[in-house]
Image (cartoon, one colour):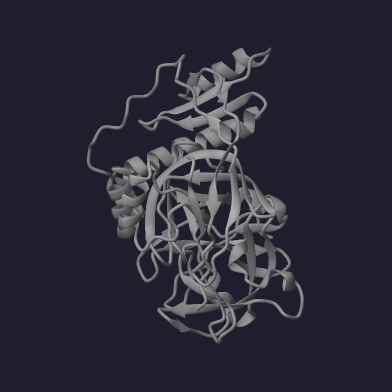
Length: 390
């Protein structure tokens, strides 16, 4: 992975270089100890699955993953079960978990007095058991060239209806001033804060005025319609660029009704309704929505990364084989109907299109890669914050 160039996914204005470091955990060859469920046959997707995914997302799943809607949902559900198993048994017992190339859930287990019990539980859950993971020393890769563009406490939040005026994850907005001085990014997940009410979760680097967060000089958030800037709908009130890259936009009272939906979409197209959250699992199928590239899909390549960007280090980032370009920053990443993370940076973010990005990265011996912050980490750092669900 030497020589990777990564771009922050806001829009473009200035260019500067930063050191970029990744810590990777190698996935071992599988020494399967359990009989795995056969791969899903290539039967037509169920009507229910087709109805659940908007056509734009179904097209992206087929194009980028070679899966039909039912296979995408089945693999996403397998990743959810893996995440829940790890949370129940404990990360000190489950030392690794992923979906293999056929979508089969696999775990590695620590040796010790609990190994046999954990192995029985894993087999009963239909998981394969692999040899312990091999640690690979950290590597230093390339440099970062962030390219910035001038230019929303209830444990079960109820989602509102989608209106013509609704703002959904993946829609375009400007962080800055109505004069166009700021950065163009994508809205993330609509959420609720127990003290502030309606908020939206997006990327931290989208806020060009982070030093004023919480002051009277708050950065405003404005909808964008092509190159046109609309009236302000909210203001940034919390921004993180260290450990995690996220920001919370406090929605103005007059616009709360427009941020009540739990959906994400390709701007202007049919929505996908988010039903909950899940931790990232290696091999899980994921799709992101962004104002620049709409829906694009891939799989989770690694988790628990340390991503160094200048003086800031993002902990527990995850990487995906998704193509994302400038303007996609802050966009939502989902697996099935579950929220996984917020888009942060890409190694092909400065390319003019995903088609060109794929060719260029192949010539460099790489592939498009999108880095993201887990949404569950953001929620854990903000008690009382919950995303909107059905």
